Image 1 (cartoon, helix red, strand yellow):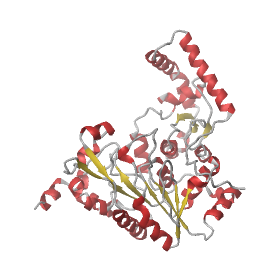
Image 2 (cartoon, helix red, strand yellow):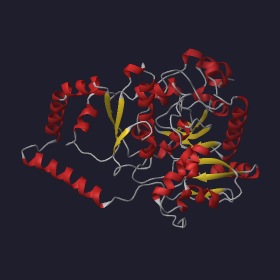
Image 3 (tube, one colour):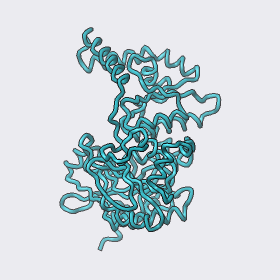
Image 4 (cartoon, rainbow, N blue to C red):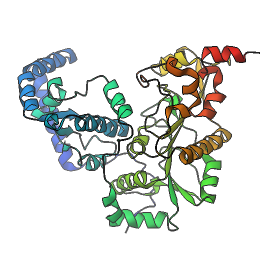
Length: 424
């Protein structure tokens, strides 16, 4: 029997089994032992860690020569949990056969936001999901002599996703077609077998307070009408206080079982026709599965590129508090919310009318460019050419800004030579 009526869940992990608690306690006791031995400051712990890293270099070189690489991934955010390992697997696959490594991924299950992600990653990695600093694999994963370290420049991962953007789907989730619990839930939630659209807005969370990143919720209403009338159903991955009721919307919080919900969401990501996502790591599965994506209400860190071969992004309008537009170079250099406040910048969500036009642009692109939305199909790329501003998230000069958003926000996004010609 599927329990689907407890709306308190969301896709946030809130369970820890007794065994995980015991192991975490052991690791905590070990740290206390170090402190009892005289290690009392963070600086001292860092010094000890660096020393161990140095001593482990010969060990790391040995494992690397034997064909083994280790990587530890951040699991508290779904985006990191999936984005980085996919990049590592692709980099490894592109090496000569004799140079490819056997990959081991350290991905703590007890700390994971979406633990089921490890089940997906098992197709490409040997997974260690329970470990501490007492494990040799932990120190090997930190060492640059034994693969790409988690401390590596994040540009490594971004560049791999861009370079291999047509080859990101390295997983096979067809087995979920035979999973009884998944199919029972699919039949319950979509008895008419409508085509599937995923909706993953970034909702308010008190523990991760990023005001500039929150997605509009009500602005999708007209799109819901259109999809439902067109024979589709939207599955919404909502959380917190976000609330929207529509006959064509299934709220995934209604699935009370965490593990089943996580598995079902991956099934939907894999099967959906396209996705509408906010500035959230929840959109990474659609990138990996090469789905068309409308990424809306993007702001900080500001980017012209969301990734994936079939994506359009709709940034928020950026205005100073006196109403004047913020230029693109300032936006690309913003680092955090403090800078936004210091510069007195307001980010304004896309309206319902904006979203309706953006949705239409996505559908037209899907029809005209079924494999990839090529660079020249974006007006911003045509206007800027090789002069397009860059940052760590867009070092390759490839904008995915929707044409509608580009024109709407021309005061911020147009090149200087084009803006000056439009001045009246």
